[in-house]
Amino acid sequence: MKRFLALLATCATILGLTGFFSPQAVAATGCKVDYTVTSQWQGGFQAGVKITNLGAPISGWKLAIAMPDAGQKLVQGWNATWSQSGSTVTAAGIDWNRTLNTGAAVEVGMVGSFTGANPKPTAYTLNGVACTGSVDETPTPDPGGDGTPVGINGQVHVCGVHLCNQYDRPVQLRGMSTHGIQWFSQCYNNASLDALAKDWKSDLLRVAMYVQEDGYETDPAGFTSRVNSLVDMAEARGMYAMIDFHTLTPGDPNYNLDRAKTFFASVAARNAGKKNVIYEIANEPNGVSWTAIKNYAEQVIPVIRAADPDAVVIVGTRGWSSLGVSDGSSESEVVNNPVNASNIMYAFHFYAASHKDSYRAAVSRASSQLPLFVTEFGTVSATGGGALDRSSTTAWLDLLDQLKIGYANWTYSDAPESSAALRPGTCDGSDYSSSGVLTESGTLLKSRISTADNFPTS
Ligand code: IDC
Image (tube, rainbow, N blue to C red):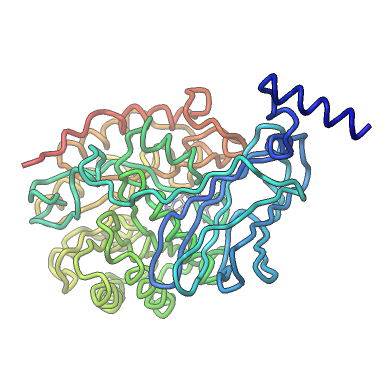
């Protein structure tokens, strides 16, 4: 028998069919891993790991990554259950991604530390089968000169009441907000962000990190790392990333003051060298005075400035970021008592079916006195649901375009609510580009956001 096989192999070699018999070629039908170091800093790195199953369908996958030595340590990971034993780092599928059909891929990621140089993994196995079709890449993070929003505009800053680009010219950034990343993490992956950057031509990804409701307060290190990863994924596609400290309930941001200081000290230090980061320090203050909000801002902004001196910071306003209007007040409380800091903007939020003419009037008046950014808005009612209000949404977006006020729409997610841009179930698949994945709100927003920006370049 052995002899027969040897003979067959010899014939195969002569016929140029060696691949058919070689052990590597057989193993290559098992799996492929794309391991990408998305960023690296002194002693640490972050990597995205895309696992493609080339073999039979698997329900319950486990990827073993052989690191060259045990000096490379897993710090944390996402989209999988991660562990390390000696020099082997293991990622196992979790509820929503444990099934991997033939040809299907799952994207996970990790943060690690290392000593000396940062070596690449030496081998991968998926449920014990070697993944031989694997690729290692370290992309160049600098998107400059490539025609992307960050490539063209560079580091933005506030000039008068506008946001200005590196040529000191006003720009309007138009984009989408994530849903709460504690609930919809699976919606933010390479495919969905490629679609956002390339098909939607979005300038901006707002990263909504809830503080309560199972958010940051439950796992500060994990959420900080996930935010950083999304900053990198936006950067790699030339999009701005707005880091939203999504306070909502309780409404007084001072309740989270210590958490805000800890969080922003960390993300500002980590992202100081990047051009694409904008900080939003309190999503929607409510049931609290402007004086209390201003006091919070004047304590958090110096923490950010100490680490990242040139980034724009956006301050939430009274009455769910309505410039006070939803509390019966107006923008004058801010105009008369502005936050004592430079290079800042004020947040204004609206939900088109709930907030109409009187709110638009307030924005029109305020726009000549305060730098404004619509860091969140919906096409529907303030509940995030109900019918889409096309005429109010159109009136709002026309006004913002005319005033060159940037915006982010709630939400780029497949949440089962009418404010979401993607149909329920979209994030279980890999198609984010076809028109069939969009809701009515998503279709409207994509048509608005994808029009040419015509950013000034001199
Ligand atoms: C809503 C979400 C909803 C979630 C709820 C939890 O759409 O799925 O259950 O938060 O708190 C805001 C907030 C934003 C709200 C949104 C819609 O910033 O967190 O999201 N909204 O209600 N302000 C006005 C509306």
